[in-house]
Image (cartoon, rainbow, N blue to C red; front, side, top):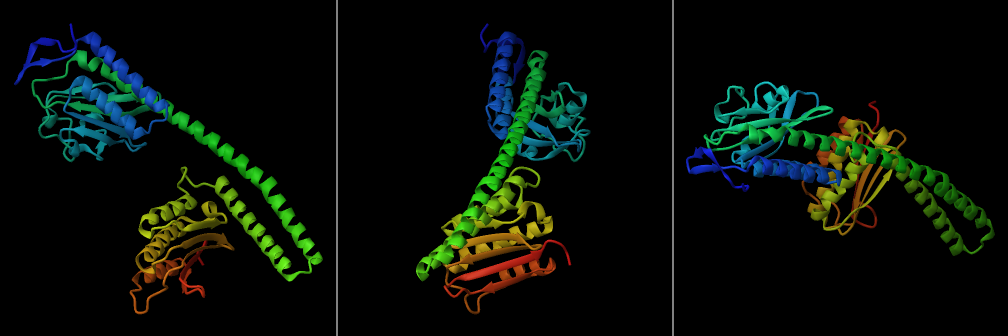
Amino acid sequence: MSEQSVSPDRRGPSGPIRRPDPPRFTERWLEANADITAGLLSGLEEPAVLEMIVDRARRILRTDLGVLALAEGDTGLLRVALASGKEAETYQGVLLPRHGSFAGAAAEARKPLTSTDLSRDPRIAAGSPRARTLGPAVAVPMVAEEGVRGVLLLARSDPLDVFTEVETGPLLAFAGQAAIAMELADRRRDAEQIALLKDRDRIARDLHDLAIQRLFATGISVQSALRFVEHEEARARLLRAVDDLDETIRIIRSTIFGLRAGRGREGSGLRAQVVRGVEDAVPALGFTPSVRLEGLIDTDVPEDVADAVQAVLGEALANVARHARASAAEVVLSVTDGTATLSVRDDGVGMPRGGRRSGLANLADRAEKLGGRLSVAAPREGGTCVTWSAPLTRR
């Protein structure tokens, strides 16, 4: 019997409903599971894998709607991560309760549940999304070792095309295998993150123990040699070299702080957010500003000051893009002596006389609320330098 063989005991409004025979069903589910597991373990991003899960299930069972909802921590809610097909907009991004939704009922039951009419199913309470034109449906929990990771919901439009046991039988194993693969991928990412942190700690230790000490010793040697140099230009060059070594040491120390520090998830610290803020401004600026970060930025800056720094940076760079006609800019964020200081300097035309100052007023207001201050200067070489600072502790 071929995959397109006809079941003789069921007819839809357009003629007989065509279903694959059971042996071919099993083979296609196994193929889908293998592809999903391979995708997750090879490093494929989770959104792409979720799309693969829904797409394979919809193709095999020939459904009009596919919804994948993931458990939202310990809240007892399911967040719809992906919805595709007919009436997908009804479900996309919504939160489904465990009690009062069809998907939630499947999560509580930990087994597949079927409905002959999703638009009128009594398990869907008021306030939960309800399909208007869909009929037969099946919801299957994605059960793994750590519990129910989510629910896969599939629905059809044809009221006579109900889900049979032959169709839903392999669905629980398919969803369970997908959940296990997601858990394994999570554990692999955790292991990679631990290895990355260990590697960063090693790099930070090597930078501190080797690079900084050698640079410091070199700087002292150059300084001690200055008394033997009589030529003024040569002395000036050596002094600049010493200054460059000091600046290099500060940069390396800042890098060490960044490697060893970190607040929350990877890339969520203030350092990373400042870099992302600068990168986001590049299209409007037409050039990439230089960035210098100094001090214990990710460990010492409290959340309210960090939030203000991001807002001030965005406003300052937006002002440069709109008004400065600049070709270069420098962003410096330093944390020293209990104060966070952000400066944004450009080489533009300077502050226009009589121009609107609402943006600067907002920056000054943010500083004042935190006990800090804002200053705007016109450097002798041209352009504008906006300096915003706030104490790390409230006065």
